[in-house]
Length: 366
Image 1: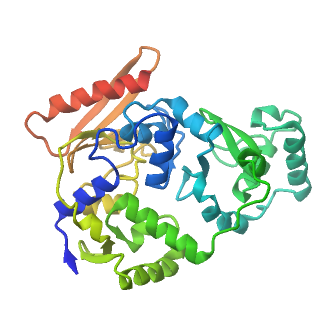
Image 2: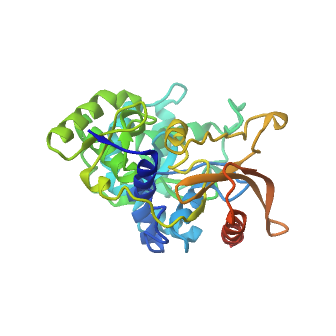
Image 3: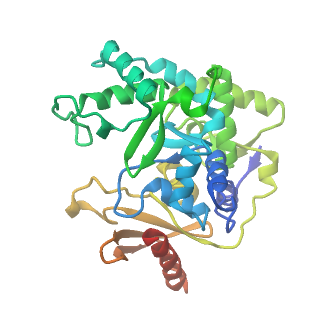
């Protein structure tokens, strides 16, 4: 059993997240492929007060990132695709078979007529990829929630997406183009689905690569039913000395022998992170490692907000030093600071954050 100090644990996690290096993945669509493959997922979200989370997360690790790079990776190189992890996300196409058991479990949801589903697949097979806007021959229905569509076919398209028969071949903003999965990837035969043990091995490998130091909860985030299978994979890896148990926090954690050798701090870089960044999204883990409780208040009444509608944590080195509630005024072409909340004010830190904000603004308005 190795004991990790909080500083050592943070250093390992920051290195695993590739936040300790200027441009760890290079640039262009290939950098997108590498980043998504390394992180395991890049979360998609609809909130657009600043650039959407998937672009923000990639820009954090690819300074020369362009939005078109993700489009090319998805639609042309086909190195990433969209599916559900703990949320809708971009995931590596090379791992498609890992997600196939979840696709098979989905089946057709209640309210989707099998005949309507088959007809939609035939239409796409005959006419090619389509968006929800291409379907205009149906009576609108009442929305079931705020983000729902009034078109009944939206539910059928989503059923095809979750079942794996359809994939998102292109995305423009939040408008998705649906294509037959096999035709999009050029398969003559669908890949063989991964077994439960193979999925568990993948989850463990993904967590060790992107988290450095991992617990059973952090490995199975959003997929708690896999805890027994992942626990078995951990036990086998410890026996083979591929994993080392470490003493950190209240929960059991594991890391690799190689990661222990890199448990030293690095040059303190400034990062303005998305609330959906892999470093931030697991709130309990973030608090355990950084002693910082992030407040996501987009759905909190304005009068009760503490840090603002869409506060972004600012990391300096291995410390969360501030939270900035930002908004992009696209008409005036400027980035607005709605609220600046200090978490740990340091000498000279405001100037360094302002420099990072200028870079962030250029990305927002590019």
